[in-house]
Image (cartoon, rainbow, N blue to C red):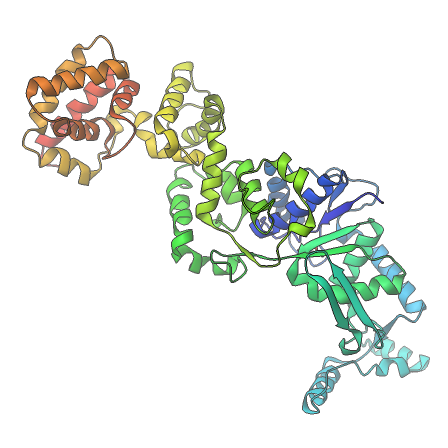
Length: 525
Ligand code: GLU
């Protein structure tokens, strides 16, 4: 059997769609599973904008997920160029060949004529097919049209007596009646090729064995099959995979629906997280990042392992129970017959649970490495943090336990990195736990003195100190612990109290309690 060669052919749009990434992943997986090649080809025939800028986020998404391509931009290969905009001669030569063999024809019909033909078909309740009047033109008539500058497109001459049969690896056997198909345009009047022509020319010339793509292209496939046949090429194996749907699984996940997603209960958390994180890390144009884009997940602190795991599970399964899979496991087990036909909905909660799992697999050092850039970008720690700061980041992460899911979650614990005089108090918590409590301020004063005198500031020692304190005062732990937490962290909740005090250290704790007491006695807040 020939080597498996798959391809992903994105049109540069300036971002990588998460659903497109899933299609790319399936192609990559099938190539890797078979020890074959994965090709990245850029569908930029309709491109007017700056290709490099529009392509960059797409390549970056592949690099972030570490999905390498064997041929394509930056790496080249034996079947290039890999940009369709550079392959025009090939398309032109193919069209000339089809014209010479009578398998395609110049069509001089004006849009008005075609419109009239369509309306006639409609009123006679028959299927519209091209009248093909251009085939009857004499040479001199054609010359006259050319002299008049009348535009001519090239159409494929559909063999109307055929049934087109496709054995799709996902959809199964699909048939189309060529007798119902209008002659498709394959070359525009300006000499540029249409998608169906360029795709077939490239897939054939690049020796693609498996065309794995979104199901919306199934309707293009009969035209492509006819082009393959007209050119005498073997068909590749087609596999049309279901689209990635919005949560709920009914409609295709789309950037055009962002306003709706923003309000949906499933997506809302993702948008809220973006609103909370991106401005803090000084990300330019943060409002341009949304959960439909792969870049969102990279920038907000997801792990490639989690995204790959989640994308693989969108429409493919290893068996009926396994959810957590490493990329190696997926590569090993990936087959097209386990791709489902029904659309799979992107589920933000499930994605987060994959992320939580993979985050949990990291060593403490790796977690520190993941989280530190967020603290640096938020201006909470120095770029090359000193040993003590790194250690503190590690302690906070340990204290966060499973509250660390996405790397940017560390920003919810900024109280450990902020200067004592910059700590902000959550006004609701401050009011409830300190201002409105009769004994909070005197108790805070007493505990502060004890903390200031403590020799041992380890979590264990502080645990004992606080228990001794409440016993001596004859109060419950609840009477001091909430006020203490709000004083030193500014917040109502956080990591374990003794760990929190220990990480902050004696000086910070004392200074922060002083500040809270002063604030409670002033009129502000
Ligand atoms: N550029 C096309 C797309 O992004 C490629 C379709 C195909 O894989 O044939 O939809």
